[in-house]
Structures are given as C-alpha cells and as structure tokens.
Length: 112
Length: 112
DNA sequence: CAATCATATACCCATATGGGTAGATGTAAA
DNA sequence: TTTACATCTACCCATATGGGTATATGATTG
Image 1 (cartoon, rainbow over the protein chains, first blue to last red):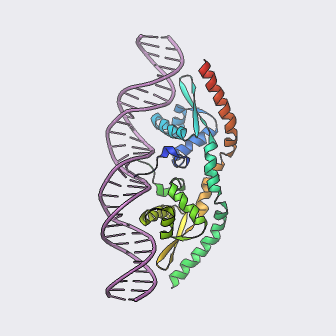
Image 2 (image 1 turned 120 degrees about the horizontal axis):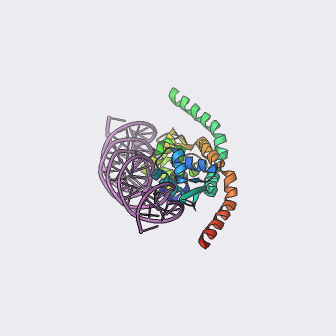
Image 3 (image 1 turned 45 degrees about the vertical axis):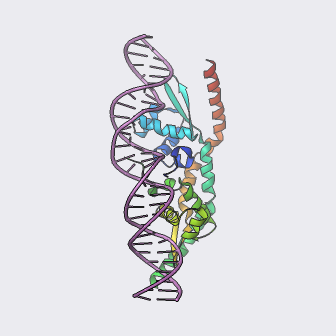
C-alpha cells in the first residue's frame, strides 16, 4: 500500500506549503482563483488543484460570483490541529530540560 | 517536480497518522523501537522508518540503552504548528457566521 | 447562438512515500 | 570470537502527489 490520500485529512492538507499560503491569503478575505494563482505565483490549474484539496477537507468553501468562483476560508478544521498540537504544550516547555539531560548523556557516552 | 520531502518539514512529518500516534505514545515516556512497533501494530522496520522521519525533523531524539535504542519526545517543533494554526483561531469562531451567510447565498442562488 | 473570460479536468511525468522482506550493522552475553 | 538480540538499511512495489500543458465545462456578453 502507499500513503494515505492527502485529500482525506486536514493534517495532510496543510502539509503542503502552497496550501498553507492559500489559507493565509484567505484570512484577508475571499478571493477568486485567478487572483490566488497570481499571488502564489503558480499557474491557475495548480491553484485549482490545491483549492480542490482544501475544499474537500472543508478548509475553504467556494461561491459563484458571476463568471468567477470565489474561495473563502472556513478555518474550523484547523481547530483540530491546534488542539492536537496543544496536547504537547507542556512537553515543549519541558523539552529544554530533557534535551539538557540528553546532552549530558551524550557527553557521558563520549567519555566512556 | 514532485512533492516536497516529508523529512524536511514538521507539518509533513505529522501528516502521517502513525507518526502522530508515535508522538502521542512518547508523551507517556521514552520507548525502545520494538515496543513502539508492538504498540502501533506494525513491523519493526516500519517503526524505524517513521522514527527516522520524526528524528530528522527533530520531534524525537534517540539514546542508546544497552542493546536497545530508546526514543524520546522533543515536542518543541510542534510549537510552530500550534502557533500557525493559532493564527486562525479568530476565524474558526467566525466561521459559523460566515457559513451561515454562505448558506443564505446558496438559498438565494437556488431561488433565482 | 457565437465569442470570450474564468475555472476545472484530463493527461503525462518524475518522484516521494509507506509497506513488506531480507540482509547489514551494532552491541551484549556466552 | 561466536551467538543472540535489537535496529537500521537496502530493495522492490504500487500509488499518491505536485507540476505543466491542453482541453473541457460554465457562465457572461454581444
């Protein structure tokens, strides 16, 4: 088997840099595809593909606006990621101490 | 070109479900590879591969312990993800209203 | 209906993965 | 140093991507 489909999971959806950029851009408001493509500096089809992934995991929604299709942010899905990482908050504070202990171990090993 | 290397980015590293499981398991304390593989229900080489990715992005560190190699959590890298998603906090609260407005739009379109 | 603009899709490619298996590498114990 | 145990690597596979280009689909306007 191969890897899980990007399209099925918010974690995978935001693993792509361009897609994160899109989400950031949409914080400033809705945008039609062409404008997003321009701001990202990628061809329109590429933008459409990324938008599709984001749409399928529910991070953006689209709305018809005349000839254009305007995409907007629906950040609710990011909450899950925020909470998951938040579950490690106490650990990244502890990590300095742990890392320190680790360094001590390395020194000890080297001397042996 | 193809996609960016998983190994170079924390966002990509945690996009894999198994790797997230590993991180969660390590919250309870350090673990040797075999134990992690057992708890994940995957063959040891698979665990080693995932651990390697996590190690390369700095989310875990390893320590020699006799014949075994013990892996421990270094959650500092998750902070970046937490903060990035946190940048959308105000939006996922707003999203309900926006979604509502969106639904209104749809109704309007349908009636036209 | 024809012409045009805005997107979405269909393909084609090269490559990164994740999984499984067998063998290499390291380390500890007999 | 020979044997046994714990991991890591090297391969082989099938597949999911992301990128680029050409084309289909939709919608607006003349």
